[in-house]
Length: 214
Image: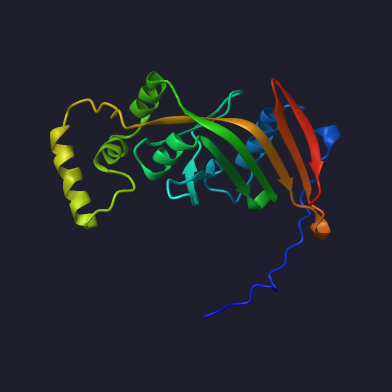
């Protein structure tokens, strides 16, 4: 089986990324770009981001999760702490997250250090979730091998009866991570593959801005 993709071509011509028109703070630039992709058409989940970790087996692994909040400190997402990604972060908190917004021909790549957020913050977000999502978080031993989907659905039915009319509290094994960035690279597609790449690197409390060759 083979398929030659060499003829796939696209000319990137929608925008530019120039040093004299952007913020010296990468979080400000991220916010600008995020607002712009939210206001544009063609991306149903602009907060979808790829999270890359180094697994316990030594291999890197990527998966898409949803960004739930960003602040001047960094980027917050939620997951099962006992999942494959949770165990990987516990051993090596250095992660990479990235966003790809093809309709604007943009990509953001962020290297950072992941840490658990305060339990009360995880409680607050868990409380805001629909009941089905709450029970789904409880019933799933994320990343573990299961015999069938039927078993999972049966466990969910039991929990639905158990929690009928009751408050559903956040399980201790589920919560949020904050990724504190140490490097943020912004990529803007340009014609003739001469793409704009601007990298911000954190030096103590200040950010150093550099242009990278495409």
